[in-house]
Length: 119
Image 1 (cartoon, rainbow, N blue to C red):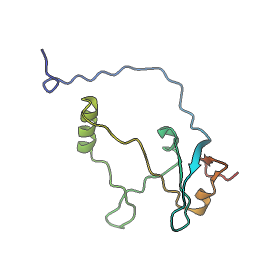
Image 2 (tube, one colour):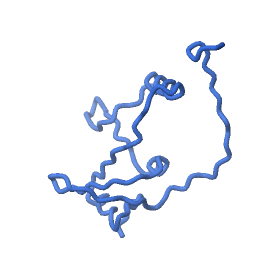
Image 3 (cartoon, rainbow, N blue to C red):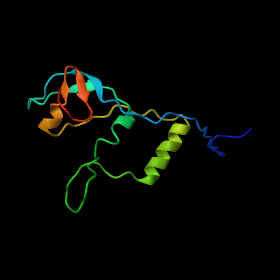
C-alpha cells in the first residue's frame, strides 16, 4: 500500500468551459460606517471579476509605496501541497478597499458597479 507522503500524483482533468464574462455589478449590503465616515459594504463576487479591474499595490522597498508582499513560489507551492492533502482550510473572504470618492460612488441601490460608474 502506498502512503500519501511517499507518492504524490497530480491529476488534472481538462474541462471545456465557456469564457468567463465578469458581471457588470454585484449585490452588496451596507454595514455601519467607519469613524471617518467611510461606508462599509459586504457582498460576494467571482474572483475572475476582480482580475481585470484592479491593481495589487505590491510593496516597493525602494519607494516605500504599496503594502502587499510579492508571492514567493516556495510559499505558494507549500500551500498548494497542503490543500491537495486536505490539511488546511483557507479563508475565502477578501477585503477590498475603495480608495477614491469616485469608487465609493460606484455603490448605490444595493449594487457595486464593477466598472466604477455611478448610477
